[in-house]
Amino acid sequence: MPQAIPDAIRLDGVSKSFRLDDGKTVTALEGIDLGLREGEFVAVLGPSGCGKSTVLRLIAGLETASTGAVRIEGRAPSELAAAHRLGVAFQDHALLPWLSVAQNIALPYRVAGSKVDHARVDALIELVGLTGFRDARPSQLSGGMRQRASIARALVLDPDVLLLDEPFGALDAVTRRHMNVELQRIWGTRTLTTLLVTHSVDEAIFLADRIIVMTGRPGRILREVTVPFPRPRDPSVLRTPEFHALVDELTLALDPEEAAL
Amino acid sequence: MTPRARLHRYGPPLLGIFLFCLAWQLIGTYRLAGLTWPPLTAVLAYLADPAHHQLLGRAARTTFAAVTLGYLTGTGIGLALALLTRLFRPARAGIDRLVALVHATPAIALAPVFMILMSRETIPVAISALAVTYLIYVAATSGLEATKAAHADLFRTLGARPLTAFWRLELPSALPALASGLKLAVPVSFMGAIVGEWFGASRGLGLLMISAMQNFQIPLLWAAVLLTTLTSLILYGLLGLFEAAVHRRFR
Ligand SMILES: Nc1ncnc2c1ncn2[C@@H]1O[C@H](COP(=O)(O)OP(=O)(O)O)[C@@H](O)[C@H]1O
Ligand SMILES: [Mg+2]
Picture 1 (cartoon, chains in turn blue, yellow):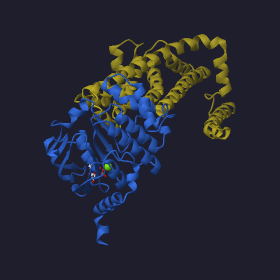
Picture 2: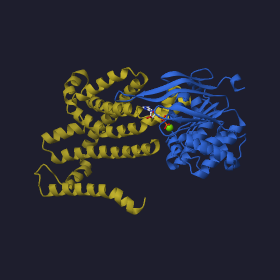
Picture 3: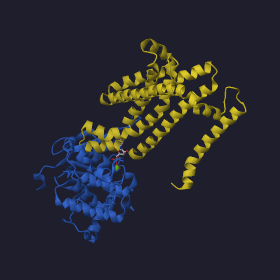
Picture 4: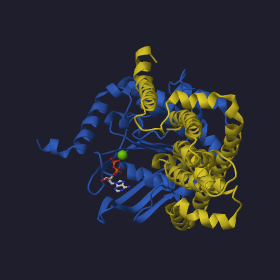
């Protein structure tokens, strides 16, 4: 069945190398073949520096592939951005320091030249737990709060493609769990093709339909795992033996040296 | 701010000003630097004497008008050139070099050219504007390059058109550097106008300084210097407050 529907996002034979200041080149990615079906939630796991952010930036149209092709709905990624249908939460929150939380979250409306839906902005502020901080500036927020504001900003235009680069990295465990549950709830209400880069195996399994495990130098896809749990997923799924087995399997895949011990 | 923090913040500068005034007064009173160094109180008394107000007032009005015009013209041209390099990137290298060349030429050397090109009364404005232009151009161009890569990435993923990105991102990002430039341009605009008056202006504080010096009117000379310096310092301080506010908000 999946083959019948064309992938919403496709990376075909993608490699990416960067030219450094000293003239050397680094190969960040090599031979990446990856497809995301429309509405699919894919999580990317891998050690630091293995090229996760680069994959995300290629899909966002912020980098161009050195070889191979990146396509969204058969077109260049920049076209999706130009249509204001892309939401990105960056690893570094990228909030504008001169705007309040509410203004930052409303920014995509203004950039798109459309009317700000204040009710929606307020609803998202509440969703990410920043009620009471709507008029605060980013400098007055903790790292975790900034990340939550940037997630709200990524969601505000109700995008068709959502790219999240370690968006929960600065959150404490409780807030992180809460955000995971909320994200899964939003995600259940509509078709939203999502790529989540994360360090957390639990988070990947709880949220994703499919998990890509990468290795570094150069960045390649090591393996893909389909998550078997049906949706909607209750947080209680995190306590099942199947969940723990999958966590162990992926943790091992991420750290093969440990397997040798 | 606690009283203690306030003392730490404002204590040293205030003490510095006090010591400076005290030293001036003592050197003048005891003639440590000769007859041409009057005590501070003598200069202040000269400034306070209504008999001198007409002379100083007329000169100050002329000079401050030239400073204002020079400052605004220089700011306008500097901003316009910076915008031009932003809108038309290939022009950047050329304009950079031209502005640097003009800046590297001493105003004194340009003055004779100005004298045959324009009226004596416009030379102070021209020299002031020229110096301000350079400062504002450098501040604005470096400000327009201060946009954070992460923010530029964000705007690209939001599908921002160039003009939208300019108004909503590049311009606000440029404000801190620009505010610093506006502050630094204050003393520069004063210096330009004062020096400009030395090339045949018929009125102004700079002219007053020269003629007072030549006629050995020591208190008048110092009064003109003090008036210029104080005005420049006060404006510098006000723009410093503005700069601090901009930096707090936009960084
Ligand atoms: N703009 C760049 N210039 C040079 N090297 C880069 C650039 N971006 C990424 N890299 C390199 O590519 C590799 C992958 O980086 P990245 O995708 O950020 O990894 P991850 O997100 O998995 O930590 C790293 O070795 C990094 O140094
Ligand atoms: Mg990364």
